[in-house]
Length: 254
Image (cartoon, rainbow, N blue to C red):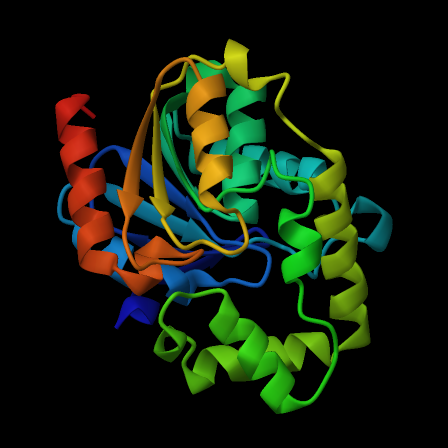
């Protein structure tokens, strides 16, 4: 169903649904738009929800960095003509959201981070599945979640195809390394944008201590935990994720 709302313009491919304040959803390094199916369905009732396909495999190798993905997001937001946006990012998407907010604070009404990179040195490198048998990749995918069933065959097939494509692997690793280099701890205390942290209590990639550090360093943050949940709360516990976020948006008049 969601694909009915897919658009392509000027090298941008994205899903757009609903009307109202724009919420831009930013997927992770090994993620995709389907990660946000439930988020799009729920929030498009009251917001204009936009999920762009990040050009993770389309940038030249030397430009495959968090900074250049953030520059791409800047071009996308300008292309859409948005004055102000709410950004929601998972994993690498959170990192891109953080960097965009640092560079364009007046453009961001609010920031939502879930399992975000940007602080924890080994968050990306350790979790990146190296080439191997299908069973090995399946296990790696399952390990990201609390409930291994969340790693559907479709999801495992996608990751297996990526890790067996040499060009994609090289670009993915380039972005992962740039994310580790681009630690944002020094920037966070100056970022006053209202920020909602929604974290899986059992996140093996960006563990709970990462969420606690974000909460301590960001001056205007709220932190919410989801129990029995790994690295992608919006996939593993979509209803709870939507409820927590909706309450926070309402409480902050967003």
